[in-house]
Image 1 (cartoon, rainbow over the protein chains, first blue to last red):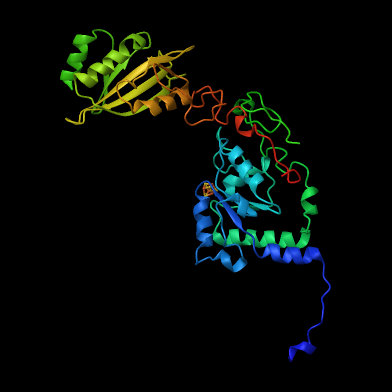
Image 2: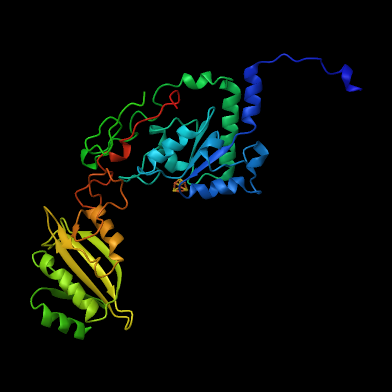
Length: 199
Length: 168
Ligand code: SF4
């Protein structure tokens, strides 16, 4: 063989590097599409935008077969336990994309039932702005996840263990009058569920 | 429509008022009369006047509404499928325990619509077979479409545990 002389007999690399290489090129999205953003998510998987070029075309509707949750759409309070359960059912290592203004911040739906950003309840890796984001933006987000995996990924998921704190917003961007009664985390006067720490 | 109103007038004298908006006729039953009269009135409309289709039930909160005397209004949109006539029956209820008789024995379709009015306004429908919340979670304590409920809620929407990355 002509190549034999050119190829080394063995390679030295890091296990982390190899793991990241294979992980990032086969992200399996879990399409948690709750509203209009889900339509753009479907368009992203279509042949025109073709997320398959980046190895993420295998969408599975079972969380147990996925490692990338894409929350596309507004999430209402009745949906939060479902969303958290889906997230907990996904096997490690896993990542989360918050797609669109609604999933990231509540968007225009500043109403009593709509959660103002899923990052209050879930660890989000990449946010995609837009209402809805274009498919190119979602592809960019997948590329960002790939870059994040390349830069921080470890084969035994040590980087996740370090993220032990709350990652959501600490305060509201805009002060509201008391009668508007928007409540930041920490004030639960009329509790519907008891807030108990998971650990 | 005059025949319908005449029938109602003969059967329930003084129990209701009428009004009209464009081509809609409305029969209004005040809060002090509604618990006793409403069911028989609806039954009369269904059995004697052929209003066989309950198209919708809607709730209204008249808190701070100009010239309103009763707080909660519940609107029954009735249709006579044979003649195409429409009639709106508006019944009122008041705090502290707004209650009206259930229309489920007359129209089975009233089931979920009454549950929705109960969920959003807290009007209890006596005789309803299964009066649970239909849209909000069962643990929800408020009735969100009441006018004295803040637009952004009372914090229920953020009352969930947070999952951090290390523990998930
Ligand atoms: S961000 Fe816009 S497109 Fe996406 S779910 Fe919200 S309203 Fe719909």
